[in-house]
Image 1 (cartoon, protein in one colour):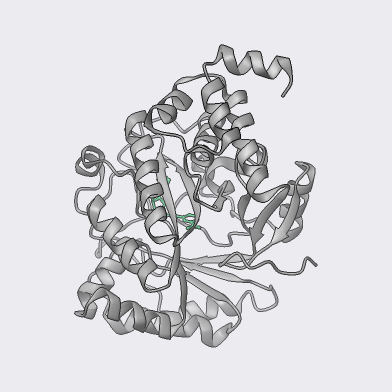
Image 2 (cartoon, protein in one colour; image 1 turned 45 degrees about the vertical axis):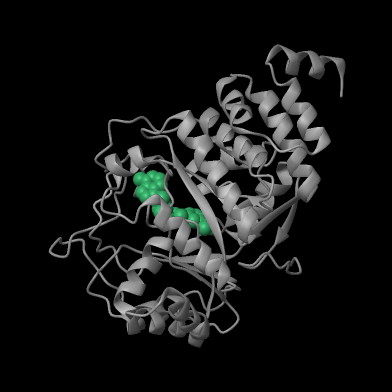
Length: 369
Ligand code: V47
């Protein structure tokens, strides 16, 4: 390391953390706080990049994917959400199995590898609907991976399945479920749960379901929603809690910090997260989650420009083409269609000096073409 970098780390009080990273020593709660408290983002990014390059070198993973939000009807009323509708709302919808198949057929010529299906908690949907949903995707595109249902949805599916979680997961797997996305985790703090998403499965519940999912041999992702009312301490606890579960199960593939988009929510007075905050979350996640293979910069929420920079601040995954994402719209602009072409993704990654590698939903590498 250069003298200049050494003195910069010393000035920011990050030398001990640097030494731990070089020695492969795990960071603790206080280290997490120190990383959040310094304003020297360049040094935090430098440290995160050391870990990123140790794990993935120059590789940057992307996937050709399609999002299907099968219903927006939801009974949870989370204050941070602009997507949900009540059953009698004019915006309310439930996609039929036919609608889902038609949507996939529209992309017939695109070699999509992952279909990401999540939705609101709609108590009127029967167990059979969820099984048919997965089967319907596989019927139209047998080669695609189905990444579906957050831990919150799985808890609801179990309610209507009226059977133990383990048995239900066997059914979903047999229908074609390949892995689960990381949503619904928000921030593991009882205070934030009470304040923002009181009606939703509690934090321990999320962990119990995730544990069962991994036990059933289904891998998943994990997320953290930041940029609302959470504190720095709550974020560090969230990350360390997830790290503990990963030690126990090894079932997580990727962590995704999700930037809160306040547009059209009950929290619309909160400002949009800054580029600085977005890069900081990526970098700190990379440093604290030493047992996670991948950290994702989800360009939809942080913009493609910041996602590109994030490839030097700890991220080694940029998600993908993300056709039809409906949960949020970057910078509150609902008028523009959010999608990047395969060529745009490749160009973004290459311009940032990284090596693009196409993956499927389970991080198997695919030949580039
Ligand atoms: O669970 C809801 C979040 C999540 C807002 O696993 C919001 O690869 C920001 O989990 N502003 C769904 N976020 C998205 C998600 C996800 C996205 C991309 C990749 C993966 C993956 C997972 O979005 C929800 C919630 O935490 N969310 N409202 C909002 N206003």
